[in-house]
Image (tube, rainbow, N blue to C red; front, side, top):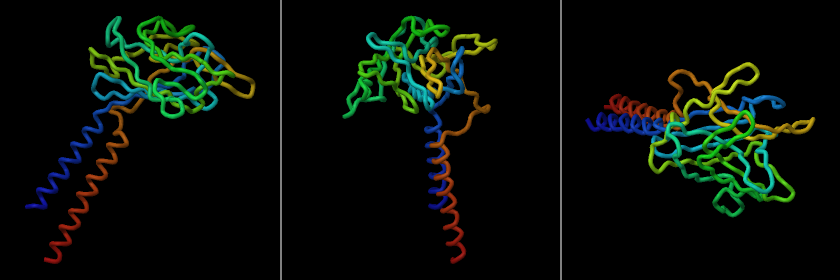
Length: 245
């Protein structure tokens, strides 16, 4: 009886942990919408929804791709909408990377630039404009340095009044480029460099398609494997005990 009770506890615990791990929804978006000059997927945006009033963002740029910087006033580096919040709703930003040497907070990176969050303005550039929120960057370095090339810009967005979810981001603004219409959720001012020089300009990110129903997250798989492994070990011990009884 004790073994059965323990087995039931292990199964229940495994399912509970797996359910908790799976409760965080994740959506990935790719920077693939642009008008000219660029090539390939320039990076991605991973948004994690914890079922709370906070969304986590991880913006990673491809090799030889950088955020375009300007000296002086803050420059729109990455922008988005939150139509699920309604108009004129402010959010707070918490930047976790990049940070200056020594762990200084606020988004400083070693070359002297500074990322800051922007609320409810006409953010964006070129064909990607009129977005309500932005990560802005001011380049204070001399000589000018660029951030990107595989580096991550990670931050969270929190609403004090309304729960946030991936659905809060909406489907994006409709943009037609090269005869194709895309629902652009995020925009960024990027710089792609190659052997022939560098191209700069606004780039849009669209949702990456996932299989229907999605797939379990790695942590969910790990918890399930651990749980079923424990069950298997208990069953083997039980059979061994019965064989020697």
